[in-house]
Length: 282
Image (cartoon, rainbow, N blue to C red; front, side, top):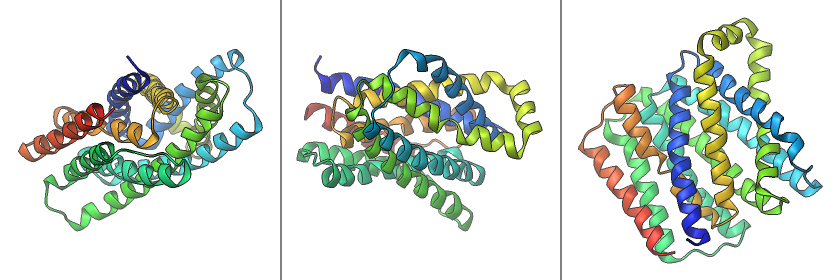
C-alpha cells in the first residue's frame, strides 16, 4: 500500500466523519450553540494532548494563524447557511466549490502538477456534488443559503491550501493538527459564551452527548485529511474529501426526511466515477 493508497483511504474515512458532524450541527435547534459545543469538545481534547507535542516554528505559526482566521469566517458562513437552508441543499454546494478552487490554488501557489485523468476525476466529483443541489426547482428562498454555502466553500478552499503548506512545514503532522485545532476551536465557543452564556449552558446540559460526538468526529475527520495532505496532492485530497456529500445526501433522506430520488442517485454515480478515475490514475 503506497502513500497515495493510504491518503485515499484516510480521506474516504474522513468523508464519513465530516458528513456526520455537519449533520449534528444541522440537527441542533441552535446551530450556533451546537457548533460551539463541537468546537469546545475538540478544544478540550487537544489541550490535553498539547504537552506531548513540540512548539511549532515561526513559519508554522504563520500558517496556523492564517488558517484560524479563514476557518472562523468559514464557520460563520456555515452557521448562516444551515439556518437559512436544508442540509441536502446547502451541504453539496459548500463541498462542491472547494475542489475546483483548490486545484487552481495548488497549481499556482504550490506548483503541483496533476495528470489529465486526475483533473477529469476532480471535475466529475465537482459536477456530481453541485448537481445534488438542483434536484428541486430553484426558488428565491434558495438563493440566500446557496450564496452562504458558496462563500463557505471559498473559505474551505483557502484554508485547505494554507493547511497543506503548514502541515508539510511542521515537524510532525500531529503537531500541526493539535496546535491548529486548539486555536481554531477557541473563537466560536468564546463568542457563544460572551453573547448567550445561559443558552450555551442549557445546550451543554441538555445536549452534551451531541457536542461530544460532533467534536470527536470533527477532530478526527480533519486530522485524517491533514495526514492525507502530507502524503498526496492537495487537489486530489480535496476532491476525494468532498465525496462526503453522498453520505450527506443519505443522512438528509434518512434523518431530515429530505428528497432522495433518481437524480441524487445519478449525481452519486458521477461522484463515484470521479473517485475511480482518480484511483486508477495513481
